[in-house]
Length: 594
Image 1 (cartoon, rainbow, N blue to C red):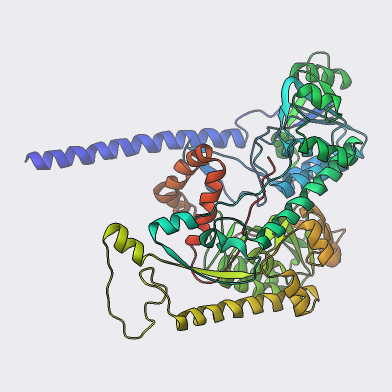
Image 2 (image 1 turned 60 degrees about the vertical axis):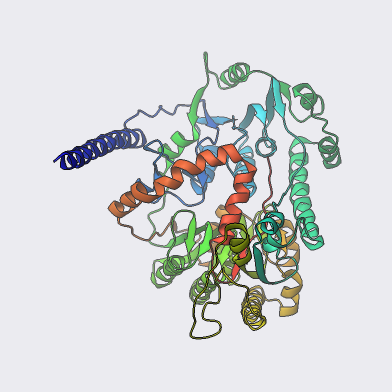
């Protein structure tokens, strides 16, 4: 009886707690929805308004597909994200809007945007300036990334006690060989190309000469591009900017002003007083936030044409089968492209890739569908922050490939990785493994034994075949010979600057330019609308999935990321490699523009 009573009370308590949780959850969701869809009154946009851009809301490539996908399980609120294309269109619209006098940049130094994404927004600001309207920038603290963005401004202000960080680019790799040696774990690596460095952390304790060379060239070309653009905007010399970084000359706000990096030292209130004055406001500026402006103008100029330019997004790691959060499912993406091929209203397709790659098989699945699509309709690839390895594999068949000078691309190479833990388990933990097999290699891939010479040859042959196929696809798609592609491949990573020089991309351009080009290629430049296809999802299943499983990731990963910083990025890279099976085509490095 006591046992029954305890069980009954425990179950009752669980039901009560669960219902309280659901009530809190629903209240927060309803509150967030009301704010997003009219619960809060948007400010009236009047003449003399200033568009305020702070980019505190995440800017992502793909527009949100549903309210459920924006739910933040840690705070039980809707975390609305701004789509890059919406941001760019809003800035372009503001240039023509008589109610907008100018733009005020007040960007957080910790803006979580990739360099190529920042470049696209900066290009939109450059176009805005041709309207004759002003751009003012203010910050208490400029990171290199936010300074690059803000350097387009007519006037740059810095808090008198603030900072401007200016020190150059870096790329670091964490190596695990020493740890594996201590644990007696033996990596079995199969790769083609001395530049395919994703497996080096398991084999070495420092960068190989080939990896050091490619990383030096990569960071050097990207940094050089940033210096050139900033120098042009600020009427400075690139050599001086390089010297300032090398000598750590920007020691304080006064030095930043003296060396011409900023125009004036002022507090935020003083800058806003200046904005009120030049816009004819008696008290304070009439600000409209970027998110508010997107909400007011979104769809106001949208075409109702039946001619569609479909923008298909491929963002995240590339995996076999179906996709998910932060993953591109090869089958899912191929299905989207197939639907666009069969839809007569879709006149051209833009594939926006922001991916370090992943499964070579998934890339092949997408490549095949890209080939079928290109045979019927124009296909333009727009590369985001990165489109490397498997990301480039998918891009190869496109009619035209556009990228930013700071896009990370190439990495045409593949590898396989196995870990032999038998000695470590036996010597460190006293664990041994035994078994039976019907054939000598029935347990191939087991982490409890070493591979035999015959098995090594077998796996290496598979790697070589995948590499040969990869190179052949690129050669066909880029109208290059196989030897030409092979000389650019071997896993070597390139910046957009180098990729344009060696023929891996066709021109510089962002998502906006890709859409314009697609419409022109399709012959509908004056009569089209942009659509974003998606795979229909069961909203209830999505919600239950988030509640039951994804909450673990959303609850703990942000905390780990905040505590571990760069180490968290190394962790995710390691997890990405070890969690995949089969031959992989994945980017070996990251570059940090802080």
